[in-house]
Image 1 (cartoon, each protein chain N blue to C red):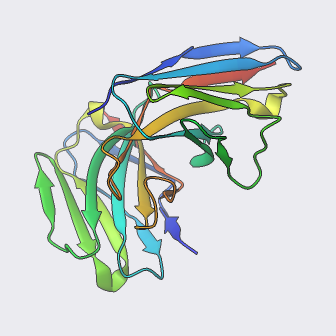
Image 2 (spheres, helix red, strand yellow; image 1 turned 135 degrees about the vertical axis):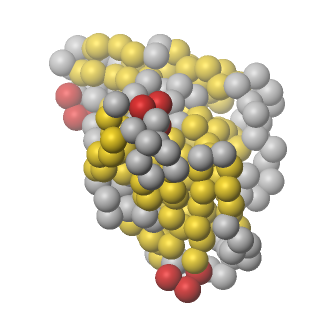
Length: 116
Length: 116
């Protein structure tokens, strides 16, 4: 299966600052997904990142707060902007490897963000 | 709307005990897919199994087995002879055939602690 690398693996940030999370896949994929997992909670989809077009955001998430880039078929970034303690979460990048319907999602190792 | 319920928030067992993690889902689709993921303390999500709605055969993989019962909308996961390395949060997920990974719904997760 695809190898998905995320950087940084963890960070502690001050409120009001921004953090950019990188996601690198070792093969070309059409869609990449960004998820948030708040402490002790399940996964919530933030947005779908397609190469060559703007990301599609889920209800409750906006581009100004979570800008996403997808410059090519193996890379994406998620920025968490103007952070507050409520943004403390694990952020996960995921892909559907072979692009067929209902292939499993494969996940990166996640970025554990703490905002103080 | 699709929904996944994992009624067991936390389970503790002693090593070598068998344990079953429950998953109940709701969907109006006749075609759908069910998944189990494992999230160890390190944070990454590991795909364990996918099952489509037309395949009700139980599956066994080593110490892991899955029981899919459409009549009760359940997809339960049993670990036989549990080990400390099985300690993790386990997520059940549901997707429909309308997209390439955009339509995953994750349950709230069950935290399994296996004590030595």
